[in-house]
Amino acid sequence: MIAPRISLSPAMKMAELLDTHVALPGVFNRMGLPYGFGEASVEEVCQKADIDARAFLLICKIYALEGYRPAAEELQSARLQDIVRYLRFSHRYYLETALPTLADAMERMSRPCQPRSREIIRRFFHDYRSELSRHFDYEEEKVFPFVEAYLAGDGEKPFMADEFSETHESAEEKLEDLKSLVVKYLPAECDLPYLQLAVFYIYSLGVDVRKHILLEDLLLAPMLPPKERTVLESRLEDSDASPLSQREKEILVSVARGMLNKEIADQYNLSIHTVITHRKNITRKTGIKTVAGLTVYALLNNLIDMNTVE
Image (cartoon, rainbow, N blue to C red; front, top):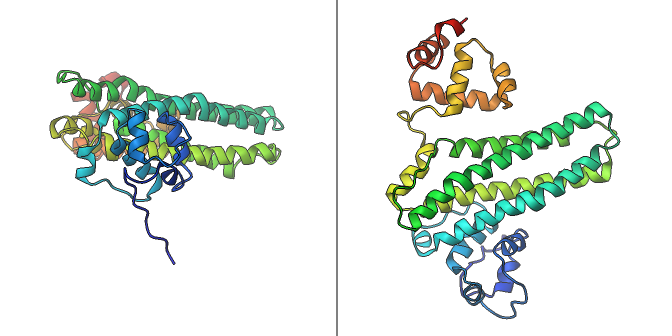
């Protein structure tokens, strides 16, 4: 018999909420909630910690309820500041705890390997770590200041949203590649206990990062009023009329110069899947499908000159 879905509400006991999903202790830690709840309710504990209970429960539901999508009234009643606060603390957790822990396991795992194999493993993990840091830097420098300016009543704060979806995609793809490398292709001489630890940490981090991205897509953007939400989601919607992002321009130039997908992927340290996705976006945005047509587009828009075209 399938157990009924638990209803998470401000009136339930905080200790009972903690029992609903294995990921929630991490959520509690990032929100700075102390233990020793006793019989206190979610509302009572959050009020004492100066946290909006409804925003806190939205975060918990994203982690605990698979396929959960918040209703409009849930979003309207929650405090957006606490969503941003949680996302900021998540960044700190990833950079200061999760990634260093995984790095240590990867390093110890690869010690018995040949020098070339160790260097490949280190380089690939460095690339993943850099990609995730890039994603966080973009949010810290662009997304969160935009949201905080809105909350402060500053409608003039600029926001460049053209990389928002791209950083999501890149972070997730790098993680998938890292999982494939560790699970399928590592040399047999790797240290088995640390290999098992590395796999555990990779999968745990992957689940957490995907929840982090869901929080942004399902809570952060929808909690803004329509005007600001349109700006924030402009990249997510990715309409045909939207301009090419900087990365798309770089790939367009590479295509116009006659480079193959693999060559482009190697040049910009991307997966071939990412390059193909960018090329589809370029075609959709420009309405041009052939390499010759894209070359003319690049020439007309001063992205390349005649001397660089093969």
